[in-house]
Length: 236
Picture 1 (spheres, rainbow, N blue to C red):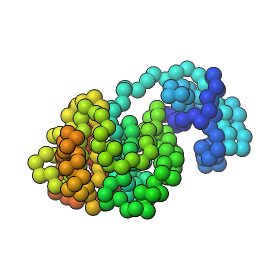
Picture 2: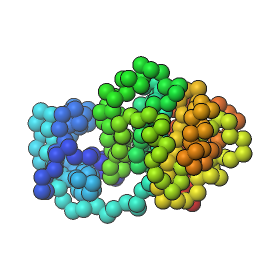
Picture 3: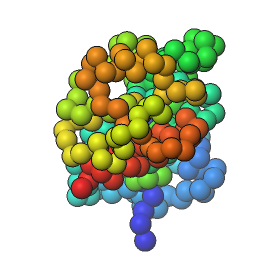
């Protein structure tokens, strides 16, 4: 049977621990017991772990041998324009499960002003969500969640391949543009899409424009679909 995987909050030598709400879920929901075995990610390395102590908001593990490393992940950074937080969190969770390396929240022209101003305070919550999603999908580490940035800064990020999703694109499909490369950037717009001025800004910084087809998708659906298509294409 495949063991559950947990990303340790504390690591010291051959001991690791889950703390706070992280531990409470294991204790109260999953009814963990001393002696149970799990896969524990300790400082980015997956090791066998045995529960040796349980206390309020604390589960302590003794670490055993290292578990062979998984294949190197594809280096895909998702630039995700900020939209309604409940839907955006769903997109962040699912894109984590799909394997993105980094997520950069972007303040776009059509990002609601109150969401833009509140976004910095949501970053820690988004990071907690990615830890949970990484554990569920058996990743060795969650994606990095960057602090929100304005689009003018985001478009200058370096990568071998840079793709922006555009409803206006009629020639290039994402599945054809996403070719195996080194670092890849994928930009998904907010509700209502990118403005023409923003698309021009992407073009000036050598981004390729691509489409998911004629169907108009919600922002969270577009983010998940685009991530899945890109990850699949990059593995070719």
